[in-house]
Length: 312
Image (tube, rainbow, N blue to C red; front, top):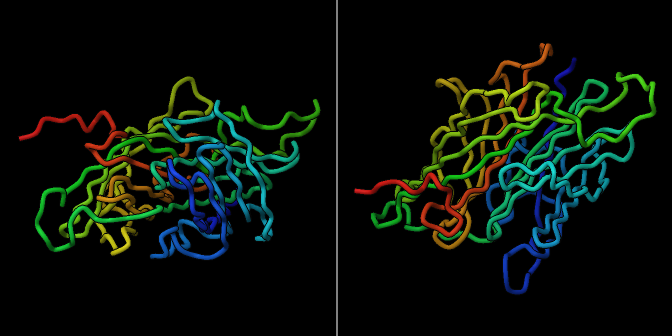
């Protein structure tokens, strides 16, 4: 089986909104960048997708470019609450039982957002990718200065999608007797937890994705998989960052993201990893994973329970 996995390049055009949560109204504009006009999302994380528009209030996700011929085809994905994972909203697309199935997860906190999109395998091919953006960014302290808030922790949940077959509950029904060979499968899902440390005095970031499980593979219980370390890397002036993902000091992929909010109250990012876990299937091809995290800063209203730690 081929491992043909392509990323999807994302871009967001941000429309002015009234009061309330930023990005309630989103205009999509083709082009690079991460939503703040800063460092572009690297091709390894986002490659062929042209754009997407997410409205967290209306719960709509519209995606341009998710098809094999790299055209400007636009599709409105269906909201699928039954597939939601740990605060990440699920959206899917499949026009008919002979068409490729697509799964997407997206989350937004105050205008900082990330999405991950993976098609199910069909004709021995998968298509996949991820991206992130923020509406605004102000660092807690200026790099090189000492001050309270220079070292900040973020924590929360992670969701990812794999190039192996999942449970298939969202697939369109087929006529009895239809052979499996030409049909699409539904991508498997992986969940976990994330802790990230932003050192805004030194302008660096690192973290870990842990308690990782493939939750919908065809077993009686979730299938545990190894942690992924997010190796230390620089924070750019616009709050964005790009780094390597590793296991036991061996590089297995890349990650990228961006801080958002006044005081960097949130962080959104994505990861791509390959050859980082043994396949629970008989498939001999490398398992490829695209994932996303959108986390609140510890001490903020949306903080994760792990933030409740003793202090000196």
